[in-house]
Image (cartoon, rainbow, N blue to C red; front, side):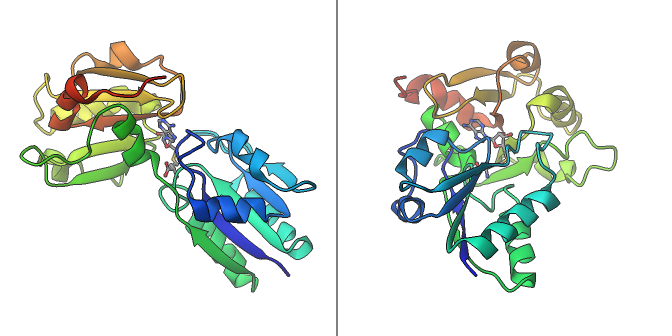
Length: 243
Ligand code: SAH
């Protein structure tokens, strides 16, 4: 029985892969990867390595999670070194914890290999620091997927603070998210940005206010994240990414 490395691939830019991740990829007998992981990373695998695409998309999964769990488990029965490659970090809305539990219940050894999460790196490539002295002392990373649900688990009332808020999986609920933020009392001219395909060469950053961001950004390509807070104003001075 093999071992499974639940590995973060970083947010897109191939070079944002850790050395530890690179080492397990080079040694892998099989790599099970997602849509969000940069497929160029697979070039680092050894000859004969098998690739299995389980194409997890933003809101709809190509394979349901329980089938993905089973694919990983079956791979561990057949191969010695199994890499489960996921976009960003495997435990930031990556369901890496669920996959690890499934393996553990079946007696399969696993390791987590952290990745650079899009939540921090994508704003960073857009010249938006998630914290900045004198502007904000904390940041939150929230699933936008929850935002539009009738019985949303998001404690909107807590979001009145000056925390930077980063919504992942939120572009399709952008309108709903800005409405909620206005409802809890954020001014309509409060800064917000949508960053599409961050760290990739076709990255796009659209900066606006709660009032106009939906019209400006609703048609951007995914993956995209939403960042809300005064730190967004730093984009005009800190923009640096040359594509
Ligand atoms: N585990 C991943 C997040 C998975 S949730 C991580 O740590 O980055 C998927 C969401 O991440 C997408 O809907 C999008 O909001 C965000 N995302 C991932 N890659 C991105 C990128 N290159 N640019 C913008 N957003 C990205």
